[in-house]
Image (cartoon, rainbow, N blue to C red; front, top):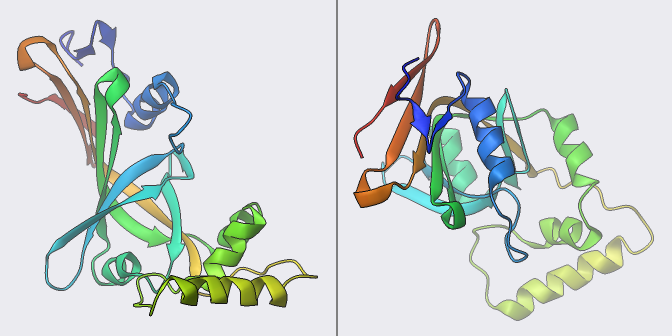
Length: 203
């Protein structure tokens, strides 16, 4: 690894997961920001990319975990094309991280464990919302929410069968930091047979 591979004078780490953890800990977190907020991009049979905000709830050496309805538009796209991308953007420190890889479902038991850690209202909304399906109006959603509040009033809320987690397993990272005169720092990590190949990219 060359001496020029630096971010503002700090040597980068040889492991992109360690580098991500360092940046994640260094980011300022405004009170309005959801921890782990990122853009997830997927595509389906048409090839048209689709992007939306998701909350990455866990990350580590295995990858990045988010949860959703398995009948949603994003889930249908993932079922067709397992490739996806995440974008984390932290404007206060002028940094972004792009991650690309393969998306797969996590074990059902893990989804159940996480579901029971959610707030009760969030558990109920997972039942009430048939995510991405057309609805006749707001009143319809509120009525469904009320019905499930009544149904589970005296019971724990079980995890819906069509709700759970996905894991994005990275094969590529790019760490971007704004630089003076638009000479930004861009460092990529590409997974190869012998480990991660690190390159500096032109801004």
